[in-house]
Amino acid sequence: MYSELGDKVKLLRNRRGLKQDDLAEVLELSRSQISNLESGRRNLSLKQLEKLCEYFQVDMSYFVMSETTDSCLDLIEKAKLLFASKELTNIQKEDLFVSIMKVYLASKENN
Image 1 (cartoon, rainbow, N blue to C red):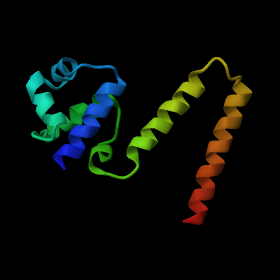
Image 2 (cartoon, rainbow, N blue to C red):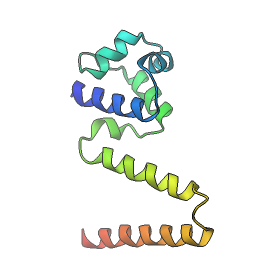
Image 3 (cartoon, rainbow, N blue to C red):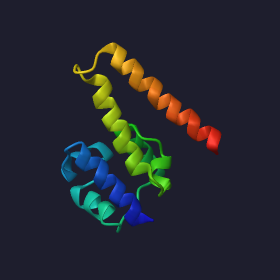
């Protein structure tokens, strides 16, 4: 489980363009402790994990669940970019939102 946690921490860190030193400062750890975390040789305390979740704005379940959370984060990031884009009109943004909601509701009906 430590290696999965480390992989996810590294993924989030890289997505933000942070160095291990940057993350070490946030968590009040050394760079070598971050390196050990990312390589699966170290774990985090609950308090450190909470701080990490707050910093990266992810739910704690992201680190616990091993399912498709990475692809979900990718999708959310892409949606943020689309909604923040000046290339789409407000009407196009509304249409995109409605389409996403329809897909979501249809998937709930099928379960």
